[in-house]
Image (cartoon, rainbow, N blue to C red; front, side, top):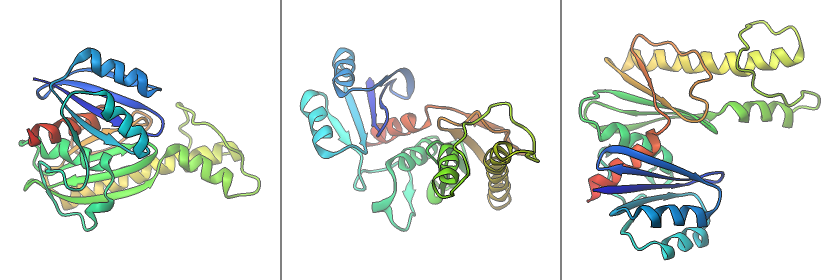
Length: 239
């Protein structure tokens, strides 16, 4: 059974193909026409759609595809018990990340760290209950905020090899505050989650997943496809 997970974001349009649970292929596109052509060529049996785009753009996609499409929203059945206090405001990416955990029965207590535009933590317990997590500014957002909300601080770019705790210039001080600060924030949160939730399985995803030195008493599994895999878990749960 060939499934397709469609993730329509503000900067990228993604389509991932799965043979049941097994990942097969991904396409990343800049235009809706290219995305449509990819899906039409692959002819999946079932699709799931997660979109943050305007209704007219989403409706155009739906009008071009003949495959059955499950549209992810707050009414969609999920492979976990959603204990979030405001489910109608819960982001689709966080739902998908939680579904990745909820759809895998042997994880126990599990945490997804999503290091992208925002830094997000999402927890699913061993009872398959999604409790929520946290949302904070991501890496680029921190650099831009220092530039936008001060009179003189420059906008600088991330440096992969920067390691110094003590910055000896304005540029290196910003790099220390953003990179080292965010790294310590993530590691501090990991330590607190591990204290509260025993035998925690940890995953990290997102565009900045490889930019930090993370510490845990457990293995941290890196996977850029967690959100798409989670969408596929939701689709399988609804078939």
